[in-house]
Length: 352
Image 1 (cartoon, one colour):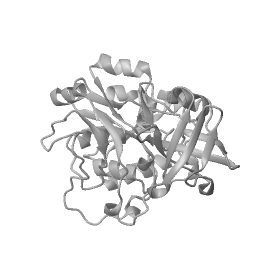
Image 2 (cartoon, rainbow, N blue to C red):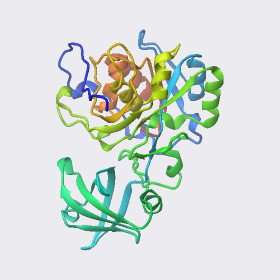
Image 3 (cartoon, helix red, strand yellow):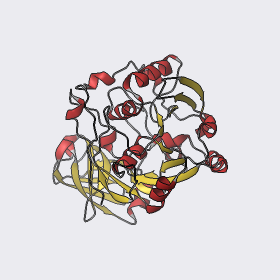
Image 4 (cartoon, one colour):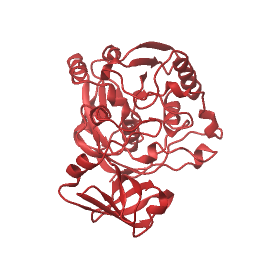
């Protein structure tokens, strides 16, 4: 297991969460995906000059160069949102976050009064959860009993765990569209959304251009999207997320001729968690609590593809660390003015 690093910071002035605020009209938050994955718009930001260019997502093929290594997060979202009934009576909701040992899981749910220790929750005829204890931050430890393979059962009784800013119930289309076309490692409770724009055809075109495709896994957890409740950025603590960087990816990164390009903040966090001071990427697996915000010195990632993130979130802080806070906020303001779609099902941004 690679050692966990929290940060690699130069000396900066005290940062406040309000420094990462901007005005986001509610109607800019995409509630549905585009008609086709690659129909989204693409804002390109040159982080050295601050120059902004507007285009469409397929133009990414021309923005990447032969010799670049494009790194994808191949985590697969599981239908971890469960709607059922408490044995004592009443409707309950449980969101499974990640497995513990012995068939137990960490999860959150509501209403809290029906999820006290000892409560039994039923989700159809194939899945039952018993609440064992309360943990920190409202998390419950639950023991699952299921008839058949758990992932198969979840496919039957669970629904995609859409983020709370998508103000609707999950629909059948979300089972495919809230999932990348290259997802293969089940375990995430939120999608690595920068990858939602890719089609198989677009990935083929990138490889034909000479761009190498590499894969890491980071199972996106709730901590990535939970709001920052501290006033000072430095006081926030990230929840740990499990990752794996295979030797094949490390070799590709260390022998590349072009740039190391991260598809999304999850890939960025993963790569930066396993990269030495000299830029050497190490194969590893484990859990990372790395929190990236302005002042951080990037060791691995040289270009980033990402979506547009909520104000005051850890995700916009990471993007600001990569491109500069003022440049990012200027780009976001321009994106709002030009009608870009924000968040998980929204448009994309390429920073180089």
